[in-house]
Image (cartoon, rainbow, N blue to C red):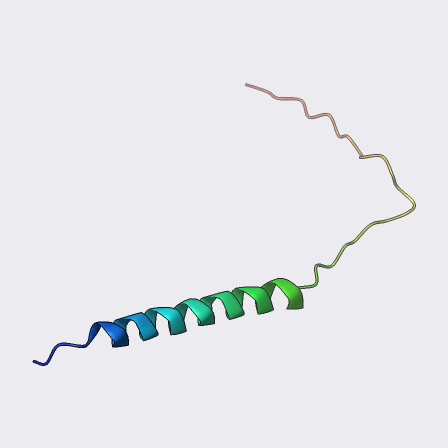
Amino acid sequence: MPQMAPMSWLMLFMFFSAMLLMINMLNYYLYSPKMNIKKESKEMSFKPSNWKW
């Protein structure tokens, strides 16, 4: 089985590193979170729960 030259390993490493960076940057800039903020209720509703052990 022939061995790969070190230059080929370096090129593969740089290629996959560049692809990883590009995919992460695309995911970061293309992700838009949906914020559901209701203006009517600003305070949190609290329901007390009675624990029966």
